[in-house]
Image (cartoon, rainbow, N blue to C red; front, side):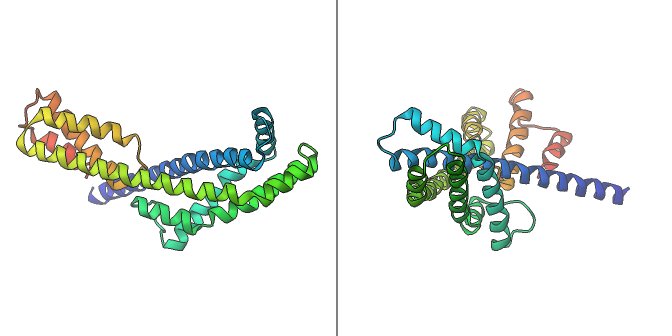
Length: 241
């Protein structure tokens, strides 16, 4: 029985790790993807200041049609995997925001995007959808786009550090009020915590701690705000540690 329970626990942990790894990957793909797309939009407008919105949109649509969207996703994924290997992450999961940032920086994302832009712009130019002058303008001025990408990624990670700091404050505040058995103050901290969780990357340690708080908070709430919980209820919370 003990061996079976150990195997179940190991399988559960492996499943949770894989789930969290996928969530982290999706988060980075979405966040970085949006940042890169916005940077390309802004960059094209800067490089082609005489073009109207409709022309800019048409150029971007042509780039997307010839593989820009898929290329961005693959470039992000490749950079993350290379970055993980470079900084020595072999478990699959990032343990904190700093690891995420270091992986992205060391994974060659900007170099990969540089190559991707050249490749896609050449394809669109060869198809005749944009002329050679526009193609060369974008390629020669791509540093404007890449610098914007790099700067905006830095801003996104700064937001993450700030969001995590806020979460830590709310967690600390909730625990202090739990110790005082002040449920009203706990509820205020909990509501802020829930809202802030929507803004952060899925870091395992933070998620586990917030899940524990959520379970304990709701147990007390559903118990008529009574802090005298049964042993079974407390054991339920421990399972999530």
